[in-house]
Image 1: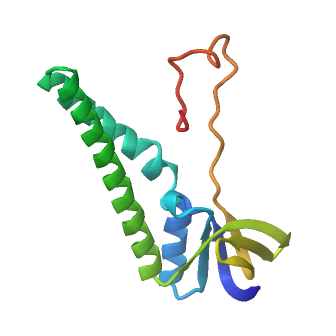
Image 2: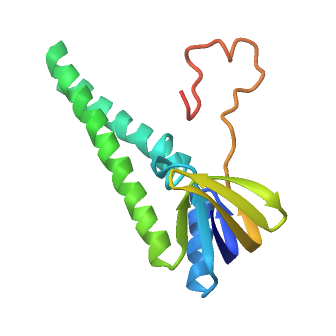
Length: 162
C-alpha cells in the first residue's frame, strides 16, 4: 500500500472538481484528484448528459433531413454513435491533460474515508492511503425523478442515466 500527502484531495472529476484542481495547483498547492473510472473524467455533462445528448440530437436532425431507406438510416445511426464516442473520449483526454498540466495528480480508484484527513483509495493497481489538509467531495448527485403521479413509469421521462 502506498501512502501520499497533499494539501488538497478532491474526490470526483466533474466540473467543480476539475476546475478546483486546476485552480489550486496553479496557486502552487499540492493537489490529488480521485476518480473511480477513466471513463468518467470530466463528469456527467461530458460523458453521459449535455455533450453526448446534444451530439446525438444534432446527428438525428441531420439524418431526418437526409431521409433514405432503413439501411442508410442505420449507417447514419452507427456513425452518430461513433462520433459521440469520439467526442467524449477526446473531451476526457483534454480534461485529464488540463488537470495534470496544471500540476495536479490524478488517481484512479474508489475513495473511502478513514478519518477526517485520510482517504483510502482502491484501484486496479491496489490500494493506497492519501492524507490531505483539505478534502473536497465532488461526487455529484443521483438521477432523480420527482414524485409526480406516473412520472416514474413514463417512457417520456429521462434522466442522465436513461
